[in-house]
Length: 154
Image (cartoon, rainbow, N blue to C red; front, side, top):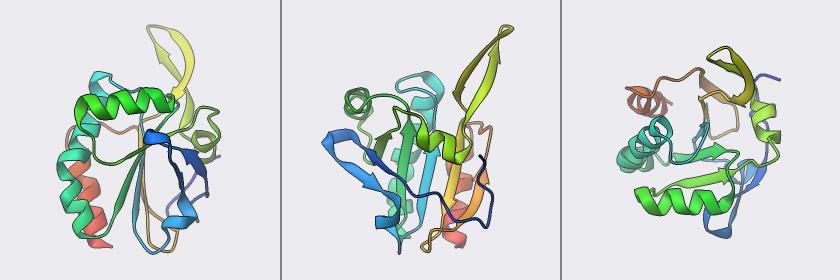
C-alpha cells in the first residue's frame, strides 16, 4: 500500500518509549510529522533524530507533534532517547503493520543482496488527518528544515 498527498492518513495505535502508546486519531487538531527510519542508534537515523530534537521548539511553536517510527523495540527506543536526549515520541512498529500501511516496508539492496527494510520517509499530516506532504527516500541533510517549512506553511 502507498499513502499519497490528499489521502486520509491510515490510523494506528503503537506502543511508545517510556511504556506509553500513541494513536494517530487522538492527535486530531494538531499537525503530525510522522517519520519512518530504519534503525535506532545508526549514523543516519541518529543524525535525523537529533535534527528533529534540535528543531522541536520550532515544531512546537506551530503546535506540531513529531513521531519517529521504526521496527525497533520499546526498550531500544528508550535507550536511543536517553543516549541522544531525544524529546519527542518514538513509536515501535514491531509487527510492521504501520510501515506496510504507509508503504515504507520495501525491498532494498546492498552489495547485491536483497532484503526487506524501512525506506526512510516522512509524512506531514494536517490537523484533520489528511496527508499534506510526503517525502520518500529521504536524505538526512536539510530534511528537517524542509519538513519544518512545510509545517509552518499549513
